[in-house]
Amino acid sequence: MSENTAVSCPDCGSEHYYETGELLACSLCGFEWNPEEAAAEEAAPVTRDAVGNVLNDGDDVTVIRDLKVKGSPQPIKAGTKVRGIRLVEPVDGHDIDCRVDGFGRMKLKSEVVKKA
Image (cartoon, rainbow, N blue to C red; front, side, top):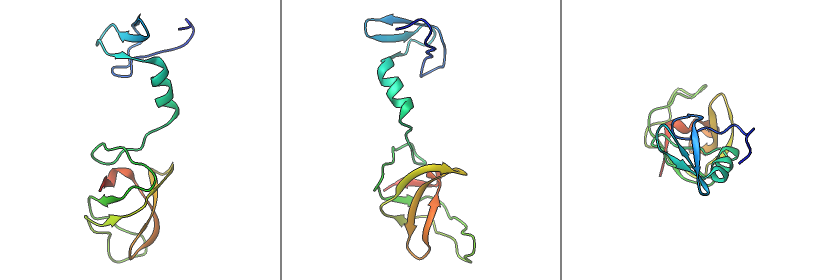
């Protein structure tokens, strides 16, 4: 581990750590982690649904609350199933590109869906 690399504990954010073999351990909370795995996780952001499940391209999700749709008098009802989502770079918090039956193509926020 080079001395000029800034490392902080993934659990508590402390910069006080020590090496225990191949792992690093936080001196404040005791959390142990592999610095190579932590760097790989930071490089690849993970999208999670409203209950914390990891979402991937092609997953089926269910809307968890009624959503108003611009230009439509009726909302997307809670419990509506959306098939084959595609994860995209977030735009105004909308990180899922999908097609909702009866409404067409749209973007949803991952915080309003749960994995089916």
